Amino acid sequence: MDDMPSQSSPLNQDLIQSLKDLLGEKGWTDDQEIISPHTSDWRGNFVGHSDFMVSPSTTEEVSEVMKLCHRYGQPVCPQGGNTGLVNGGIAYGEIVLSMARMNNVRSIDTFNNSLVAEAGCILANVHTAADEQDRYFPLSLGSQGSCTIGGLISTNAGGVAVLRYGMMRDLLLGMEVVTANGEIWSALRGLRKDNTGYDLKHLFCGAEGTLGIVTAATLKLFPKPKTATAWLTLETPQKAVELLSLVRKHAGDSVTGFEILPKVGVELAAREIDAVRDPLPNEAPWRILLEVSLASEDHAQDVLQTVLEKALEDSLITDGVVAASLSQAEMFWHVRESLPLVKRGFLTSVNHDISVPVSKVPQFLETTEAAMKEMVPDVEIFAFGHLGDGNIHYGVAERTDAENPTVKAKSLDITFKVHQIVTDLGGSISAEHGVGLLKRDELPDHKSETELNMMRSIKKALDPENLMNPGRVISVR
Ligand SMILES: Cc1cc2nc3c(=O)[nH]c(=O)nc-3n(C[C@H](O)[C@H](O)[C@H](O)COP(=O)(O)OP(=O)(O)OC[C@H]3O[C@@H](n4cnc5c(N)ncnc54)[C@H](O)[C@@H]3O)c2cc1C
Image 1 (cartoon, rainbow, N blue to C red):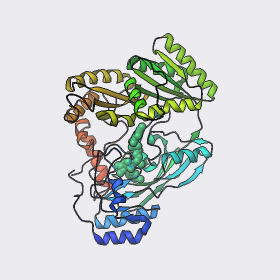
Image 2: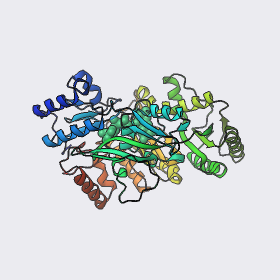
Image 3: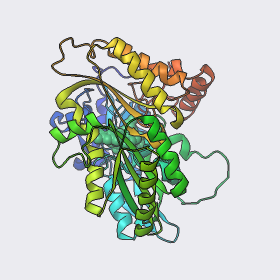
Image 4: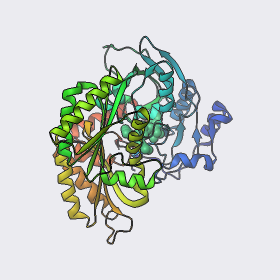
């Protein structure tokens, strides 16, 4: 944590008084009962500290906050919904800059199919705002009741519809940012074409708060899709990859979701979480949740029915069912969304968020499982996720009552090995969660010096005083 502020260095009291005067009572707190939920993550894995939190309510206030912090050389840690998974939004001595009060949808343009949302807007509320105008914002993930537009942009979040609509980066038409020295850059125009030089919004997307504060964004909207959803069971990940190819043959680019789940994971979810049950409880070790979006629901249902029959005929699946109603489809998705939440009760696990080319997912799973069996006597592999994007959330687990508990003690070796296999297969050690502090020190093993130097140059150019989330993603010292 070399270039991060010391947890014990006191804050400048002139700065604190100026921030209080600027923001008024609703805009700041030094109450540890209020601050502490913001300085630890939802799993309790990372616990930081901050003496002061600001919650500006307008872009102009964010700008004034940053001007003051710049004048006093005070680092800040921006935060949205605090659902990030890589220790990027937890303060370690910095002032917490919460975006929670900037939560307005500023405008919707149905002819341009675009929506301008402030950074603190919760994703589920953006879904509702789009829905009320008969439009659709497609980014969808398990944390959507808490995560914010600013956090989603800053982590370039993925989720369950990337196959059809892309990552957050692909859904951006414009952005408003406050820079490290407090200037406001506003480019919310919502243009689909604009080739007037560097596309700066893409720098701030995925920067994890290290380059500036995202205060608002213009997002792409779509016509509401007509979907059909199926739950399939199958023997191997290789058959799943072949199944994806078959679905694409019939549905083209209309495949919205293609999620893989292990039988063992669904069983654990069913034991721990309300209203979760395996829709097809049979012995096959894998399940696929498949969604297609087409012009009409009937057409989508017909396509899935055809795929299902063909897949059975070709022995790609052992069984399958197309959801007969919206509530049944929601039940299938509930099972999927429960998976990230189940591990704590039953297992100790070391988790990874990796991607490899889709065609190499079976090889990744096979090679890594063999390697893990050598390292951990009673290993249980808990692998699930966005197979259609080659993105697997790979948990190396053991029961909490394992006879020879090994996973915790060997966690660094386990991660090193998993990431080495990923790199050998041409993959990425962070598919969608980002780098934060969790993976920062691993980057040099997976990126060239040239690439790291370009990243450092960008950071130094936009934040020369190193005030924006210092030490996260890339160290400049
Ligand atoms: C149950 C669960 C399921 C999840 N599923 C997925 C998934 O499928 N796909 C996926 O990609 N992620 C997933 N995540 C991770 C997480 O939800 C995303 O990373 C999300 O984008 C974080 O948004 P947030 O508002 O909570 O950001 P935070 O956690 O508050 O912050 C994340 C990072 O962004 C920075 N930041 C936040 N707001 C701003 C801003 N306005 N300006 C500048 N920097 C800012 C922070 O400093 C931090 O570095 C999941 C998390 C949970 C808990």
